[in-house]
Structure formats: structure tokens, C-alpha cells
Length: 297
Image (tube, rainbow, N blue to C red; front, side, top):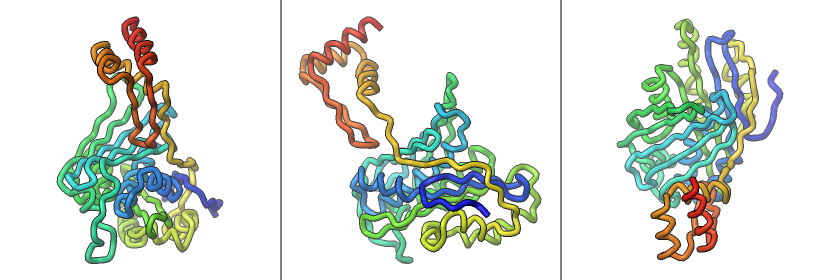
């Protein structure tokens, strides 16, 4: 029996002696944090929450703690561009417009695909600490995000995958959020894949399932008879690593001409973070110091 914990974390598991990779997570607290920071409507909370949850899976797969992954979705919907970044268990998200409101779909569910858009691309940039990052891209297939990530794994990484993502809301509150990733390893027998397909309806509404049972209990129920083995737990949290030092580096990177313009015309500068909405103000004197540093560099 897997020890049960009521917190945001990723369970990395295997089935059938390593024939299937499993990532199962709860992300309720970090989705609530994102909703609070961005003042998001329920449909935008669901969209950003699903994107964060899937990006967290990619982040946990990265081997080094300094490695990171950035997922960008441009679907042509009213939310505009969505961006999520994961560095191991730290995840953050933003969208051009997180206050979009749409009517529910005919089945009574939030219209995430309508908010995100269905005609566009998803790009995944993995910073592995090398000279050039890995970049994968694929066309959106639904805008509902789970199917889009499954398509990304299959098309860009040649890894057939089943992805389930869910964010259950009530007004401004996130009741439950989480996700599941199943990936058959090379050589996985067809009968094992058939078993997963037969059980897939059990995963379809994962956030609602999490209101009745914790993720550990769900793993035991869903994969009974398939030898589930827990390999690792990774805590998850909404965390933005922005700082005044990083903003200084961003200003220096603008170059001498742009800094001189800010000093002469704007008499100072204020930079804001899209992920946590922190603001950093710089006086004319501070910009002049940065200009000197830029000149020296």
C-alpha cells in the first residue's frame, strides 16, 4: 500500500515491472495560487491549471535541478498566449488575458478549448544546460490541453501516451486539480496496452475522482493487478523565481542605446513580472549605474 499524503506532489510510478511509466499528481494548491495571482475566471483557471499540471510532469522528468521546460500554447482563442514554466517541482503560468468569460459547453463543462482556441501550435522548449535547447512543436488538436499534450508526446517525442488533466472549480475556489500520464515503454506487450485502454474511462474525469479518493488510493484502484510500484515523490508548488537582480540583468541586456533612452525620456523604469505580478521600480540614478555596467561588459 502506498503511503497517503494530502498535498501537491508528483508520484512517479511504473506498472508491470517497468513496462509502463506513470506520472500521477495532485495540483490543487498551485492551481488555486495561480487563480488568485491572475484573478482568473473559472474557465481560465481550468486552462492554466491543466497547462501547469502537464508542464509539471515534463519538469519532473528533467534530470538536473537547473534544467527547465517552457510550454507555450498559441491557440487563437480569447485568452491569447499561455505560457507555463517548470523547474523540477516549481511551476508558474501566465496568460495574455486570464479574465475571459465563456458560457458552459452543452455538456455543462467549462469551455477550455473555446478559451484557449483550437487552431494554433504548442511549443515545448527544454533547457538542458547545453548550448542549444531542445525545441519541439506540434499543431493543437483540441485546445483542451490534455489531448494536445498526448499529441505532442506522440508526434514530437515518438512516445504514445495517455494524458488526463482536470481542474474542478466552484466560483473562485479550486476544489481539486490533478493529472495522469501513462506511457508504454518500448516492447510493452499489446495485452498490457489493451488493459490500459480498457481502464481509460476511469481516468477521464480525474479532478472529480480526486474529490472521492486521494491520489494514492486512486492509483491502487486504477492499477489493481498491474503491479504498481512507487519510485519517487516530488513536491509541487507555484513558485516564481523573479528577483530585482534578474530584472537588472534584463535591463542591461537591452543595451546602451535603450538604457540611455529610458534615462533621458522616461526618467526611470518599472518592470513587472507576468507570472507573479511583482513590480520592480528603478530610479534614474539606478539606471545610470546599470548603464555603466553595460558599458563595462
